[in-house]
Image (cartoon, rainbow, N blue to C red; front, side, top):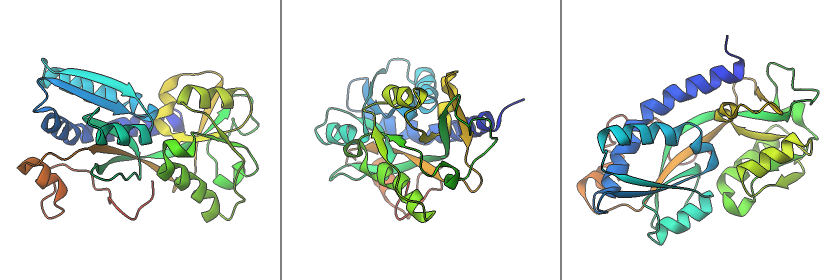
Length: 248
């Protein structure tokens, strides 16, 4: 029997597979002029489910395509895209950069990541007020200000005092800080795929806040890209996620 966190991961994987077609359409379009090479950046959260799903399908549909994956923060990916050092990025939303097209790809619930011995780790679900007063482990704000601010805004919307934030430069460091008992974190439900015994993922009670994973690229000047960019002609199968005004 799946745990509540496992059910979230299963449901998320189904949504990921449904969204892969749109991701690949854009990826192939971006890679068309690059002699069979696709340079992809990804935040850590995308590496657990989205990137493997995309790579499996790419391997089947374009076996001659060389894909180079780099784990980078949202800000680093946007800068690399603008400098033409990446072709496609999987970033935390919302995200904005001059000249870079960012399109929401999927949403998934946030879950509380707790040390295994935490008093709340035996709960089947939590409300955000249950976590009030706990230090919060996040990435540095400069690495992804949109998603960082969104998570802190959740506390404000719940009329909770802002948490003390501990910053870890990467996912490994963030989870190590939580496992050591220095704080808790709010992470995408896909982190349930990590299989770590020193951490416990507890779902947030419905309606759970969500986080956005977005696709970022420099739009080439062709019909496919114009169709992606035009709200009057959305690509077939595109996710029904509003691109503006809904924080991630």
